[in-house]
Structure formats: C-alpha cells, structure tokens
Length: 114
Length: 115
Image (cartoon, rainbow over all chains, first blue to last red; front, top):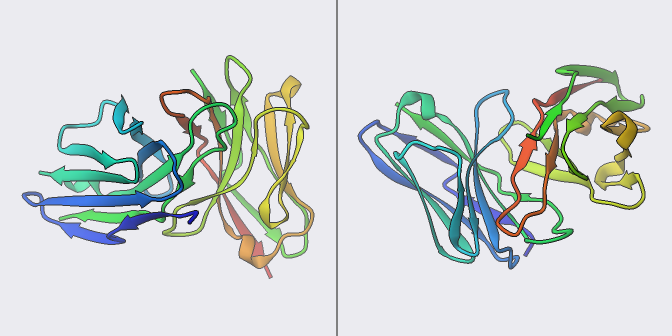
C-alpha cells in the first residue's frame, strides 16, 4: 500500500460546527503532516508529527487541533472555523532520516466554511 | 531560511514540444530538492527528487531535472509534452531531519498544453 487516504473528500461546515478530517497511511512512515492550500497558492505547513508526537506547529490558530492516535492515523479537529479557513487540506507522510525520499500526499479534503 | 523561486507563473506549450520549468532555491546547506505535480482539486504527486550524487535526476512520466549548485537551480525538463501534462508544478526544498522534514514550496508554475 503506497497511498495516503484522506476522508472526507469534501466537507461543508458552519462556523459553529465541530468536524474532523482523517488521514491514514500504511507505509510505515513515522512522520505525518498537515498542509493547508488556498486556491492558486502553494501548500503551507500547519503541523508535523514525528513518532506520534507533535514536533512542529506553525503558529496555527487553536481552532485547528491535530491528533495522532497511532503511527498510521492523523486527525485534524476543527471547531469555530471562519470562512477564510476554506481551503484544500492536505495530509502527507514520509520516512525519517537520511534519504527518506520526500512526502507522499493524500488527495486532500476540500473544506468550505459557511 | 530556505526559499524557492519559480519565476514563471504560467507557461503554454504545444503538444510534442519540449518543456523546461525553472526553479531557484536558497538554502544554507546541501539541499534536498523535489518537483511535485498537482492536477486540479487533487493532491501532489512526487515527480522526482535530488539528494546527492548524479546531478541529472530521472523521474516519472518522462520528466528529468538537473541540479546546478553554481546557479542554485533545479530546472525540470521534458523532451516532448503530452496533453495530460497540463497541471500545476511545484518545486520544493527541504532538509532531512529526525523530527520531520519541513518542505518549502515555490509558488508554482501552471502548465497549459495546446493541441
């Protein structure tokens, strides 16, 4: 299995809703990432998990809450989002260490906040 | 701080023509360099990567890239473009770290292919 699977593919939520994005990989990768991508822009790093521990938080607002329950799963919990948070949310994974080989990306969750 | 510049926002080529997408990077040490492709509404797919060794790197879908340290460049090339190559292309630079590899992406080049 060489894929990163993200669910749901599309999500529409109100500003008072709580929802979660899910990401799963079975490649044995020990680093997992959340990126946010606005239209016609490059991906921007949000969080990095290394060995199931949060290692990088790029000053993301607390309305985004990541969770890594085990080495294969990564969640992003959403609460009280704003319309400007509408974007494509990409999950990725990678091995760690020398020559790890770059990321494998999921196909993303298209989030619309209304 | 690491950074990537893709000077061409949009490029149009005819099907069957050759292609070169430019990428310049800024990094304090030996960089790890990547090219990714993204079709509309999709995730990013790794085309090729450079870590060390041979400066001409072969990737998937007939793409290649050449690392030139003296020019801080990592340009992507393809000898004959197919209509299915129309997409957004991102160059990225990163560092291998034990705590996770932060990739910095360029702003992307959108490729259109004329029939």
